[in-house]
Length: 100
Image (cartoon, rainbow, N blue to C red; front, side, top):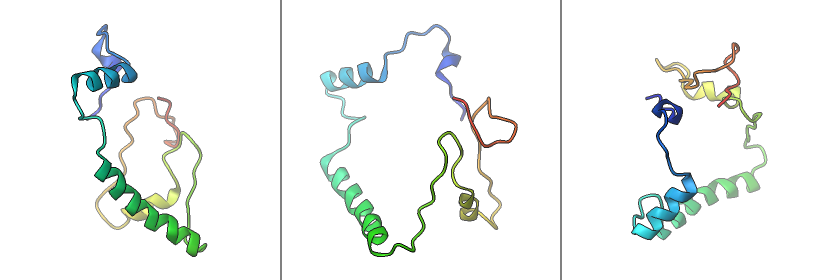
């Protein structure tokens, strides 16, 4: 699904901050994370951080901002009948930089 707010025309949409405040005032917790979810997330992430701290040979792949990530991400789906989807309409000719 390709969705762009600009396609809605002249519809006045609240900012993300306005929406969050309104949801808070209405008691809608849909956009808020529960405490047990935060704890579970940190337990998962902490194992990764501990592994990086204890074994410096584990690679951490950086990539420039605005690009689609490190080239090694292709290895994740190599040998399968999959390909990465580039959702930007105005992607550059070399398919490495997306102007949002």
